[in-house]
Image (tube, rainbow, N blue to C red; front, top):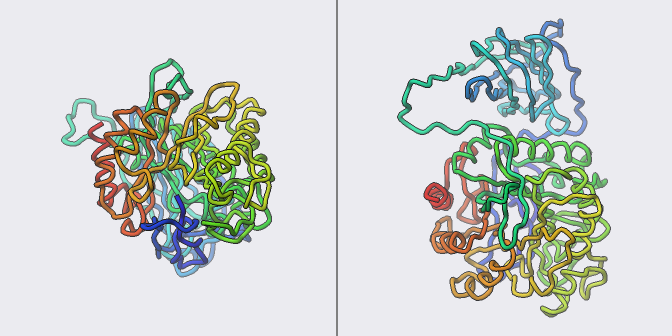
Length: 524
């Protein structure tokens, strides 16, 4: 479905995160947000990694706090360290240092470059987040193994300057104690590999699996608008909050220009920096047992026809179809990056609407499948068949999701125009909102129900624009009854009164809309 909101501009950001073509009323717009992010700047270089025992000169004028908290499951734990700039000038490039007193051994880290020498641990900023602004914080996390005591460190430095600490004690597992509340589950991986089995998705052992998850918006717009890569945290704490809702999958929208490192994107947020950040986040999701769905959301190609979201040829809004010049190299690269990782699903293009450009449903579906020169679209289109072929040419066997027409709400001709896949590993992607044309039980029965008998259907996005959950209360039971997977839009903190937002805080505090979704998952 169309997106009516323009792209965000420089902070304070008052424009919503998703730009889009004009919609029929009522339109779904994504709300304004005013919270300032600690966005990275391209000119800052990461400092060299220094062991804690090295004599690093303190940075003059630096004022900071470091909080340390763990999620300990006995024999292993996740350490979450949050650096806060308590001064009046930004920290430009940072190295965090601390030491353990026991045998804690680093396994892997994210949102920073982690190293360990003996008991000393250092973390340097990732290339996409070198700056922490005054009053802002940044969280970096890692997994450790240990035996015996797991005593929290008491001394931290940032760029050689003592900071904090604000440490939370490391709890020891107490198997004889009966908790009064159910604790948040610890990281549990690996995520299940999935494939198509008849009309369902299945795990490697053939057990059917339904994806019940959320969309994590941000990586499609932050980079191209010069603000960073992720909108909000992409750390263990935020994923733990998701897991508390009992989700098993997260859809991550991506930007073509940022992945390919085009010149219109700040290099700090493009090319290798962007790819590494996305890969790191997917790894984090997988370590927590979550399936990742990577979605090509914004693409190149100048389009000013019906329902155009922008006139920009760059990937700054939703286009009716992706461009062949960018989308095919994009999917070739993504497939090469995640080949062999069948816990990652590829959603080939977010919300096609070619029939609005070509002038008819039949010509729209032909453009959808075959691409090339499509009436009304002034660039060479990457059709679904070409994108399937691009992925398969790399040897990647990942499940591929293909959204239908009318912003993925129309699947009526999906089966008739289904591309050929030698691996028969395709799923139909359907988007469902209360303002869509197909938003009633009778339409679902007529248009979606018959397809579920032959092909897996994944509701890649669902929601409503009234900050309530009346639409979900009808839709979700129907999806469960028909074995349809679903991922709600969106795990972001914008104002849900003007767009579907599940949470008001990244600790998982739900909006009224999110409360309905969380309650459904809890009862499932």
